[in-house]
Image 1 (cartoon, rainbow, N blue to C red):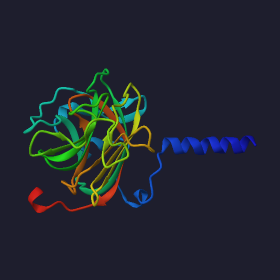
Image 2 (spheres, rainbow, N blue to C red):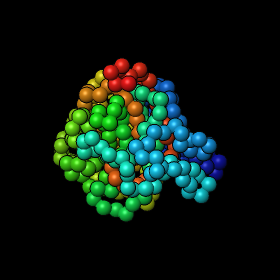
Image 3 (cartoon, helix red, strand yellow):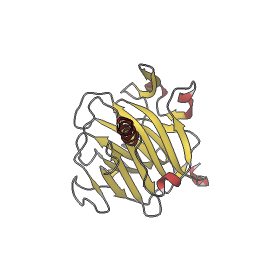
Length: 241
């Protein structure tokens, strides 16, 4: 009986540590995996400002670290300053899983951001996960040749409908599981934070059907680890190359 109990505990721990995918999501091929333990891991990423990024460490564990808050990157429209894009991978539908940790003291706009549908500096989506929601924070945002705009209304509205967002999250000093789900045909964008059964945001938009993915922040710092990208690889349109 003791062995059975131990086995059950181990299975439960595995499930908690590795969030389960829903039907169909696990069928998409793994396009990229990285735990930053191997030399040269930073070379797979294209940063807006290389001086802000390094491979950091927590004990023996290596992480991708956005360690400098001030960025030399100049945006053409109001949009995030500090991010790094995965090189050479362009996706349509995808599921992005990773761990993330904020490394600034808590305040209303304390954030980390996750980028997708990136076609050029003024055409992309990003998810802004923050402590408190307002028109510019804790939402799914679009940059479409003008300053970023939220794709979701007031927090707590239309829960269970086409779009919603919670009132915010608690970053604290801990690592958190993050999942971003994109389904191009119906425009679905879902964002999960810690709880992989219940999204903290949902939006619907079909403006960008493909693009690169990335991680970063609007203007804070943070660490990223254990990144897995499942998706459908696509060739970008010639006018966006």
